[in-house]
Length: 115
Length: 111
Image (tube, rainbow over all chains, first blue to last red):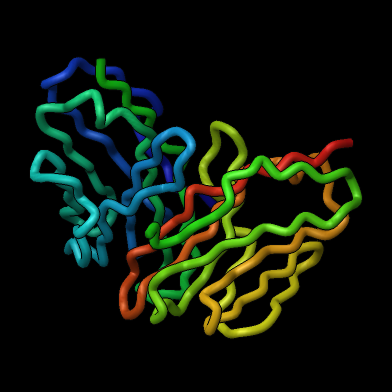
């Protein structure tokens, strides 16, 4: 079956612009996660959705970052007034249920470059 | 102190040798522990999970967990050049689903 997909694969934008990054989880997966990975670092947790609701958004760095999952499937990560420090690979992952032991399946990521 | 610490490496081992990767974590209440492999330019993929003290074996991989010492390790037996990648240790916090990753250890297996 299809894995987690993310679009776009690459996004180049200018400082101060608004961007949206999309994640399509594996069909039927109720849990969805967003991470940010900078060069030489491990993925950094941003937010976790269980269904439509954000169950844990403690990793969002500031109020410029916002994520939604209105129908409990596709999720969009929104970044306002982008800064050069936002440049990173944004990873999305999904898992079947809300068990803490569930495997997370990662998408290929969106590489964001803020000029 | 970082929540999950790994030696960044690189760790270089000859083909056929055992590669030993180590990880320590700070949250004593952590319950779930994972090892991911990440090839350059690719996303992480899960190779092992462990939840109880002791060893867990899966093919050439063995994960070891010692909660008292807050220590997790991954052994790769009969290392192959295709095992060359960054290995990420990840810990899931108590009662939640927030997963904390270490910075990863780069492994090179020399043919």
